[in-house]
Length: 96
Image 1 (cartoon, helix red, strand yellow):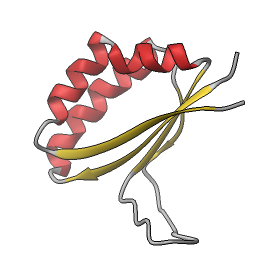
Image 2 (image 1 turned 180 degrees about the vertical axis):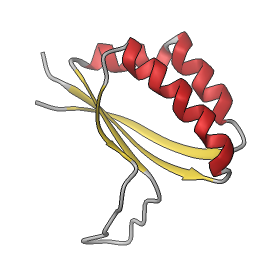
Image 3 (image 1 turned 135 degrees about the vertical axis):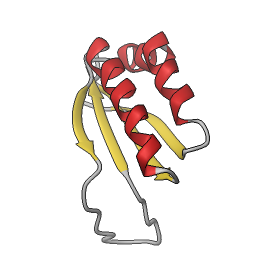
Image 4 (image 1 turned 30 degrees about the vertical axis):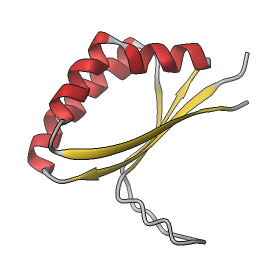
């Protein structure tokens, strides 16, 4: 079974309020076995015109586990806390 990755680019508009989202999303990540590979950090664009502001990369043991995280009650609470304070772009990618 392939691993799965959730890759997110987040444009945070209210950094202070975003801290609550981070707390709640951490609870969801722990509850669903996410391995945090990247959570913020400096970004250097090497090619193209993509200028992400905040990158998050989570690894899951399977696509089903990643979807269960995304659809969970725990992450739903985090998503609700994020409303109006950040723009989220998120994809699920199957990997090795």
